[in-house]
Length: 343
Ligand code: SF4
Image (cartoon, rainbow, N blue to C red; front, side, top):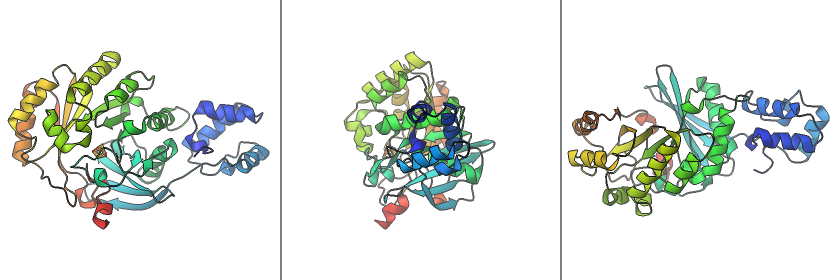
């Protein structure tokens, strides 16, 4: 929304304030009240002169807010939030608790254009990109319920790099010391691997951690599982990641969803190692989480452990992520599964 003050960077707020002949300090009040004190009305920014508040409102400026529709609690501590974006679009976010870590998995699009076959979101109709304000608001709502979010993963509904500018803007807002001040090392973007956007990310000043959903050791298997596999060969992705690493020096997380009989054999683990040799990586093996109509099955636990062993024996730090939040359809790949059932 053009006149949404929640969507504006600090620099843009300064411009608005100065174009209204107000002091720069007013931009600070606006930013802090919106991004630290959760103000959702201009009138709530009380340090601003009353006449200026009235002027902003009469000119159509607003502070947007998404609506929390539902909250689902899993006995394992996972919480799923369902949000209404106000135009018929809905999204989900998931809070995962792990010791002191309070992680929120947030959405960047209503639906997804990437069409991965093992993911419920990929089967939904793509509706639209989220604004930066709608992305950060998921965090603000979650924090009122679960306390301070320590880690953020852009891994919910949608492909973050397909909504590049809004995602980067949201990270800048969340990272800003005048607002939530979430450290950049605690923010991860998870992409299905868009080479051009990975290169763009490397060129940015603010660079979050990067995770790449590979899910296959070769193009033949990848294109079967992910529509995007037909567009970008693995070689292009690995080259983009190598350049990214050269530029940033950052380790990359590889996400690999193990699917029974498709990509979970020992030979696949060995091929994966060979393919990723030029990179400094760690691997998350994710157990497939079924959704209605999904044609794939999760791999047996023994198979996942054997796969992991091949990687760890080669010195690759590997974590197996077993199901979390499955009872409330909040596990990886299940977001939007309830709406799929309704369809
Ligand atoms: S796995 Fe990610 S990129 Fe693929 S369809 Fe699901 S949300 Fe989109």
